[in-house]
Amino acid sequence: MPLAEKLQFVHEVLRQRHDTVARVAIAIYDPKTDLLKTFVDSSGGATPLTNYQAKLSDSASLSAIRDEGTPRVVNDLEVFAGHGAEHSRRIAQHGYRSSYTMPMFLHGSFFGFVFFNAYEKGAFEPETLHDCNVFGHLIALVVGNDLDSFKTLLATIKTARQIT
Image 1 (tube, rainbow, N blue to C red):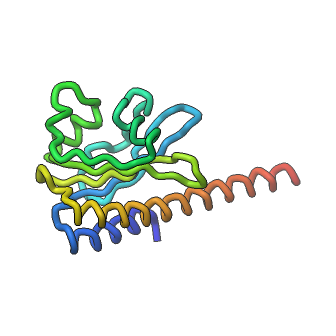
Image 2 (spheres, rainbow, N blue to C red):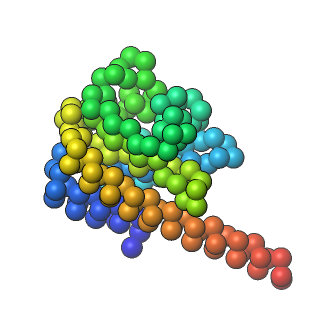
């Protein structure tokens, strides 16, 4: 099953418990370039950040999440109005009003974020946060496994080329 379908399935299960969670998205980090790139989201329709990338070091708030290794809740995205990064403006333009951002780590190395968005301010109450945290870890495991498999495939191809 493709990763996008897995993410949509996990999101649907989460929505059965918390229908305010309108979107789940994944961004992958490339440490060689310091670029954070949109990877996949669960919306199934128009997405606010198609083919978007930005330097992680240009976002103090996302860098802090990575450095601290802890999630962040923003229950009113208006805090970024007028001075936020382009990605924050695009999210707000699509009507999202609150978010939960969780860093992803694989073998102790940061590799991206899981973003949960809601159209309502204050949507991420304790029970919702608990479930988003559980589902976020599940998503990180699935994405990390897919990335590990891809890296293994590339290494195998590289080795095969050297042999022939």
